[in-house]
Length: 497
Image (cartoon, rainbow, N blue to C red):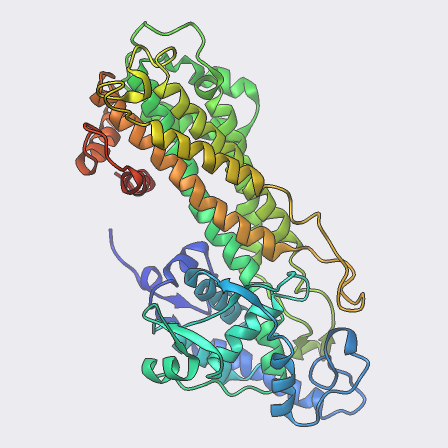
């Protein structure tokens, strides 16, 4: 495959994608073209014109913030910047995962680069330069309601970029000033409008949702492949995937998933040892996985819109001589989407756990030994792994309560409705990792099933998946800790094997 510039860099003049956010975890060139700088500078020049007019109010540049908008802000631009960021230093908890923070800043940079925020051109250039290094601001997890943007976490990010607070360099947590100097980066110099624009967007919410979506999509496809391998190993009849049957169901996601599965199972031969109708964890898998595909397509559309939109307040439109005060920092779309991701994760995780349960049960696995133990009693095979998967599913279920329905008023009722999209997105990100482990657990079980007597897959694609697993995972004989094997299996099935 030919590698293009877009595969290895981000151009702020082009659309942003979830793939860009994944690559932002490592050093990545972010390109700021002349067209981008021109529109940013036009927006900045227009801001200057508006600020010079004593009759035109501009939130956050001439005023206080949030519920204190009715009071005048500080007269010095440097003081207004400090005032913006200092009062938001109220976050708590562990630092955000570094890939989320880097992705969030890429989303923020792209939004500011559209020229509607009135920021200084050097802010966009400085943010872009950061991505060529391993610098990551240290940002506490708790504090955002995702309603006026991710104010508190983005304030910590902005402070670190100014050389205040803490940051990571090459994964090591340092005072931000030291991290900047070691990375060869200049501290950002901000005025009040620059500071407010950096924090006044839902970039953390968008980034966490996008990263969760990428992981869950990978697990969704892996689970479709693993279901096929299960069908082949136990010798089930793939008739439940008949295109006429699935077409009659009427749901496009099921049609799509069933097509994948038929391709993976092409060449399989049923053993004739199974019942006429399989349990639902096999027979209804295209319907379940198909419903997940439809739901993930909805989330795709929300993430795409968020990545292609400007999240800030106010916005500046020089061509129309308009300063528009509104609510483009309100993260309700991502809140709904992230809650959907959590529900999808719960259903997919439950399917993986139920399939593993079928596989270790001699009453349902076509005569394989209990727990897939090479010597039942003397050995215990997948017994510990199955216990862990039960815990994973319980943890996912505990976290599925929709965050987007939990609105609480805050900020003297200025923010009288809030979406809690940040909570929904970070929760989806966490649950996505548990789903990966469930897929890895099922994959490990399938590799072991063939070792203890299950048939070698008859479909070439299924056989290739089994061989990829067997190449990196030894049979469980004798018993050994399997935590690492689960993670290795998860990596295999998430790849192209």
